[in-house]
Image 1 (spheres, helix red, strand yellow):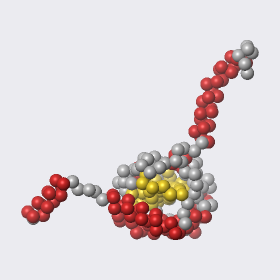
Image 2 (image 1 turned 90 degrees about the horizontal axis):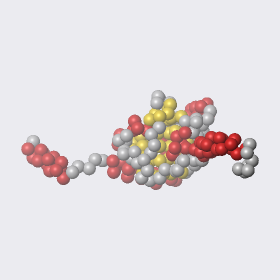
Image 3 (image 1 turned 135 degrees about the horizontal axis):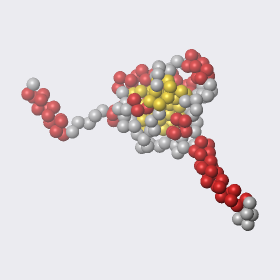
Image 4 (image 1 turned 90 degrees about the vertical axis):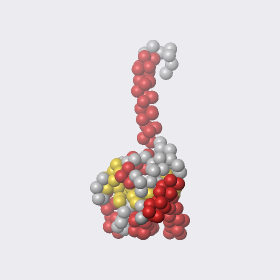
Length: 196
C-alpha cells in the first residue's frame, strides 16, 4: 500500500487505528505477563473454589503459599502431600496454603483431587487469567507471599528433596511475621508487669 494509490490510502488510514488496537489487544492476550519476583506485590484475584470464593485479599495478614497446579502435572502429584503437611503443621502459626488449578476441564481437577485430596483451599481458573497475571510459565509454580502481600520467594517445579528447603523458607517467613514491639511498648509491658 502506498500513498500514491488514491483508493487504498483513505481505506488504510481509516483502518489503521483499529488495526493498532487489535494488535495491542492480541499482545495482551498472547504474550505472558511479567513474571513476579521477590519484593513485588502479588495481584489480588477472586476465583471460585472448592469451599466457596477464594480471594487473595482475604488472606491479608497471613503468610500464603500460593501454588499453581494442573491435573496433568507429574510434580504436582508429589507436591500435594507436602502442601497438606505444611498446612497442617503451620496453620496455627499463620500459614495458608492456596492451590490454583488451571485445568480447562473441571472433571480433570476433580479426578486429581479424588486421588490426592487437598487439606487446603483450592481455587479454579480454567480461563488462565491468574497465572497470566503472575507470569507463570510452568506447573507447578509456587509463590510464598508475606502478610503484607509482597512476594517473598518464587519456586518452579517440585521434587520431594526440595521440601526441606521450601519448609525453611516458610518457617523464616512465619518467624518474620511476628509483630515487633517498639521500645516504649516494651517499657510499658515491663512497668505493667511490675505494677501487677
